Image (cartoon, rainbow, N blue to C red; front, side, top):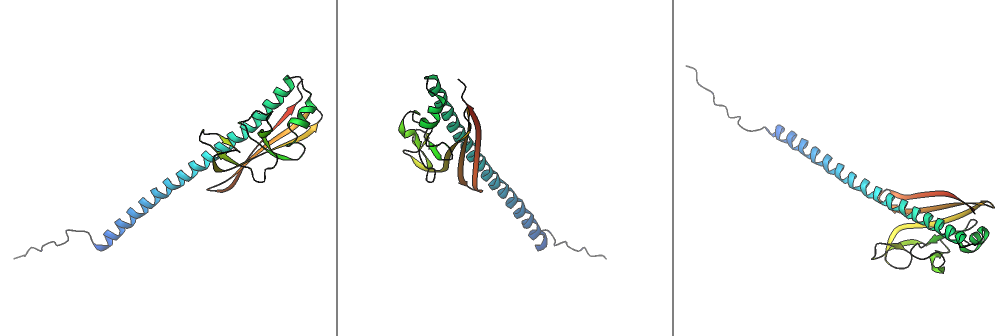
Length: 175
C-alpha cells in the first residue's frame, strides 16, 4: 500500500556547513585579536613602568646629590652652580646614575642624543650596553633663592607611538 520513503538527509547541507565555518572563523579571529591586543597593551605598560622608574631614579639621584652636598657643609648656591651647572637654568642634561654625583662622568651636557643603554648587569647607563628606546633628560629651574624645580622627562618610542613620562619635584635649601 504505502511505500516507505527513505530519508537520504543524513549530513549537513552546504549552507549549514558554511555558516558553521563562518562562526568558527569569527570566534577564532576574535580570540586571536584579543590576545594580540592584550600582549601589546602589556608591553606598553611594561615600557611605561620602566620609564617611570628611570625618571624616579634620576630624581632620587639629584636629591641624593643635594643632600650629600649640603651635609658635607657646602652652600646651597654652590650645589646649584657647580654640581648641577649642566642641568641648571633651562639647560637639559642626562644623569648616569651608576656614577657618584661628584664624578664628572655622571652628567652629560646634552639630551639631544641621550638614549640610555642597557648593559649586561641589567643597568641603564650612557657608557656601554645595547641601545634602548628610552631617552632621559633633567631640567633644573630656579624658583627663588631657596627653591628649585627639578623635572625629569623620559621619552620613548613604542608600539603606540612616542610617549613621555614627566616627574617634577621642588627641592629646597633645608639647612
